[in-house]
Length: 233
Image 1 (cartoon, rainbow, N blue to C red):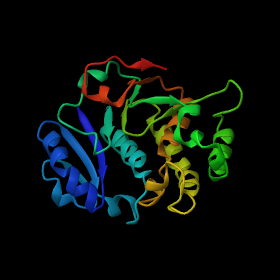
Image 2 (cartoon, rainbow, N blue to C red):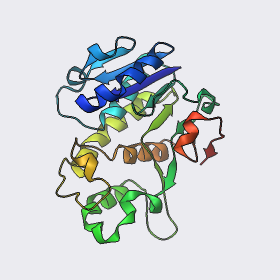
Image 3 (cartoon, helix red, strand yellow):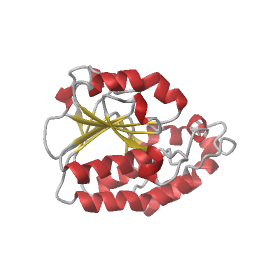
Image 4 (spheres, rainbow, N blue to C red):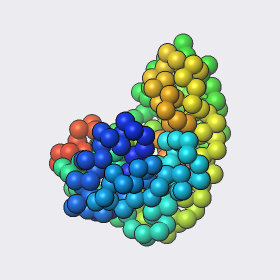
C-alpha cells in the first residue's frame, strides 16, 4: 500500500515520527514535513519547498494527496500521522473506484452545527456550503467527510479533481483562519491556534458530490484498526 501523511511542528514530529517510521519499514510512506531527517524510513518532501511558504495550513493534506495521485497514478492512502500505525486495517480497501474514509457524518451531527449560539462564527461556512450545492436546510442534509483517513482511487479524471481541489483552497483558508479569538467557544478553537484551512473535510465533501465519487466510511474510527465493514454512502 502507498501511504501519505503530513507531520509538521515540534509536537507532532516528536510524538509521531517513530510510529510513522515503523509503517515506513513495511510500506511506502510519503511524508510532507518540516523535519525530513526524522523520517529516514519514509519518502519525504519538505513542507516549505512543496507549499512555497512555511506557515501551516491543514489544506496541505489535500494538495499533497492529489500531487501524489497525479505523480504515482495509483491509489494513495492519506492517513493523519496520529492515526497511521502498523496495524492499520488494509482490508478496508475493497475496490478500485471508491473513496474510503474515516467516519462520515450527516451535517447536523458535525461540530460546526452543534452550537447554534455560535452560528454567526460559521456564517461564511454556511454560505460556502450553499454556493457549492451542499444544502443544510429542511431534509437536505449532506454527508461530511472527516479528515483522518482518505483512501483516494486513481481515476481517469484525477487531474480535473486535483485542479478543483486547488481551486477550493483559497476559500477554505479564508473561512477557516488562524484566529483563536474568533473561534473561541467552538470545537474548532484548538485547530485555529495552529494554522489555517482546518475545514479541509469540507473541500473533500464538495469533491465527492461534484465528481460523483462513491464513498465508503467506517462507522467508528476505531474500526480503522479492526476488520469491520464500511458503510456505503
